Image (tube, rainbow, N blue to C red; front, top):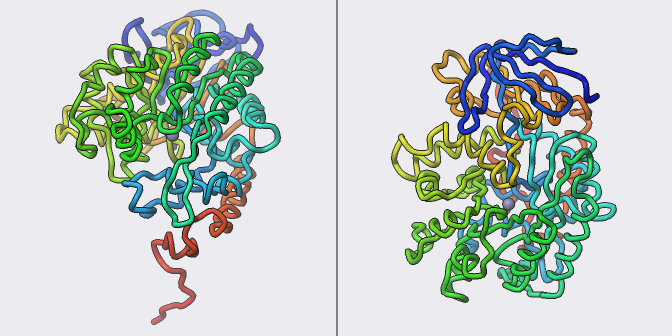
Length: 497
Ligand SMILES: [Zn+2]
């Protein structure tokens, strides 16, 4: 958009930032000049080049998604309702784990570009204008020169993306007996870090600053202490953040306690790794969690005092019968909370609803995990984790990343409070327009840049192919239909009167 173009958005309900909190302005205007918001308030008497009528709608800041895997989630979709019992309800260890050391995984049979395009489009259409990708390891990184395609596609679409190639000192695999094992290769981890550093040197700031670097040691579980220390130093030298998976599985947490006597978060604290530039997904199994039988230490205090952000992604854990204990407890302890979509659908509004509902269930208290706090996590919380005071809010000077939700619909019905209506009644389908850096990327619910039908067909072809190769990557010699039976059998018959 040319620097001088001025857009006036007339909003029915505007989520405006007063410098400290979100507020609601009824029947107000947001003025965008180029890529920046220049005015938010009741009236503005200047001349605009164009106007967006959102007088029946909610106008809010673009949501900040601090944990996503920009891919099709072929494995994740497969293990719903099923998977191995010896992984203690962990989902990802089922399908991210190779058959033998360096053995094939489901991702080897996907076409990364198809997954990336579908995924970025889904994230954007559901209201996420800024996305952190967890290192491209899920269907993202192997096609045509590492992470290049992901950056190019994000640049083409116009979404904000934080990423770099993920790295690890160990890989999970299943041995010949089908047992879960870990293969350590310290040098591979160090080489991965080097690759990530050069990626960031090349791409940080690309596409008008929408592509940004973040270091992604993939998991606490698969990183040596030396790799974590070097990551911390590299992040400081590059002036970028760090994100990793941490305290996300019972196996990981017990391995840490058995090896070091400390939970993952306590160990990271001991290493000096935690800090305001660090985002941990998902920080579930901290001292005192009811599933780990280890009540010792105060992990939440460690997170709070170091300003370490938790990327909370409740849906993927709810599907395995698990939850954080609890959103409110973390908040009360002062832990910075942000939101992500670890799984599919890549719908951060849906995740916000689950965060509120699962938070109430975890505490058996309906006053906890309030809508307001969940909304703050998905906006201000994410922006804090990324050190971006220009994101997650609408005020003069903030980035023109704006989401307009269609409130003239039956789905919402009557409402007393627009934010409760949004989070408790809706999901990403309510999103009507999405603007990033002043560019309208979703208009009337459709992408303006890509053909949705084409990208959907493409990702379905790619994923069907990956499922057809089940025997290649699955440790047991059993057909996919037997391992993951369909809800109902296909029937060729009929009934007739
Ligand atoms: Zn993840």
